[in-house]
Image (cartoon, rainbow, N blue to C red; front, side, top):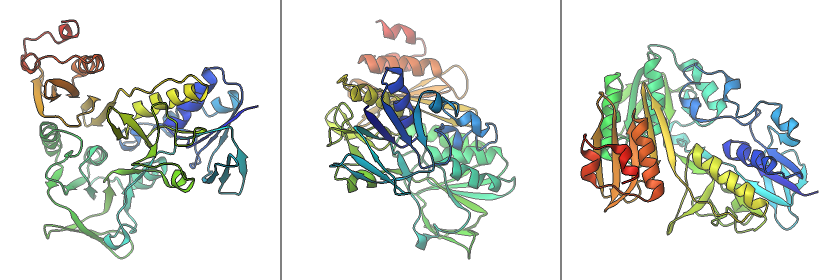
Amino acid sequence: MAHIIVVGAGQAGASLVAKLRGEGFDGEITLIGAEPVPPYQRPPLSKAYLLGEMAEERLYLRPADYYADQNITLRLNTRVVAVDRAAQVVETNDGTRLGYDQLALTVGAHPRTLPRKMGGMLNGVFAVRDLADADAMAPAFEAGKHVLIIGGGYIGLEAAAVASKRGLKVTLIEMADRILQRVAAPETSDYFRALHQTHGVDIRESVGLTRLTGDDHVTGAELSDGMHLDIDFAIVGVGITPATILAGAAGLDVDNGITTDSHGRTSDPRIWAAGDCASLIWGDQRIRLESVGNAIDQAETVALNMLGREQPYIAKPWFWSDQYDCKLQIAGLNLGYTDVYVRKGDTTGVQSHWYYKGDQLIAVDAMNDPRNYMIGKRLIEAGRSPSPSQIIDPATDMKALLTS
């Protein structure tokens, strides 16, 4: 009986094994996860879960008994330490060796951390990546405490929103010229800067961290502009790096992620990869997509291809972020954009930013504007590009753009 092993029990791994069973695969499936809990949603960790609005069980992607019911062996609290490609065997941290016919790596990514010399090992310095991280920092969220957030990307901004809502004093530093510089246009940066400042968050751009200070627990921060802050704890949100050590040690090709072809195969045809760890083909370049949508869609395509379907994966990028009462929804990728056009809504705070590369619409950021988000998403996926003058004209019937 064929045995498929999936290493990494996150969104991609859970989606892959469910798709295998849903498509009728009746062989052996083993899903291996390093954490002690079943696969769960990660986005709420920096939002509803950290706010105390969501119980742990509600994070679970499927009921805990689903895996046994589907005859899927779920090995939790287990790490794969080596892949022997010649023998088609994985070895776990307890010395167990498991043979596979096909192997999928859905191992995700790791948060970037501060080095020890910058105070990264002090108590009270947190990342936001997994359930253990969220549980570790939750007790620190007491009204009146001062938190320093290092990094003005979406994770840092979401953490800032939670801290502000919980009544903490919040300082956020971003060493780039503006928050969200790597992922969004200045117009989107301006929107969220103003939103956070309205809620009392002290945002300092073009300011880096020199080091965190304290004997055992962090008590202060020295900033690149010479300022010193007294703080109670710090959250580091400076991005993630794909988990490629296992793949690299096994001799698989790695290029800002585990290199995959259009079907999700790695450089070994019996090994596949999906999710945050996978480097995929996008047009004439390689990219990684750090999103729930990609983790699900790519993993399900890989499952089909493990069953011989030979179906190319065509990514349809979409993302979201919740901050205060604002829901940001993003469709497409803004890589290489040349112009951004702003469409204002009828209500304060409702607007959308439309990214063009020359004459081509490539992405949309929609703030509290789900209707235009869906229209933009459908336009991008259909390869349609309305004129910018139509986009910014408040009289334009946006839905009509789908058929015009």
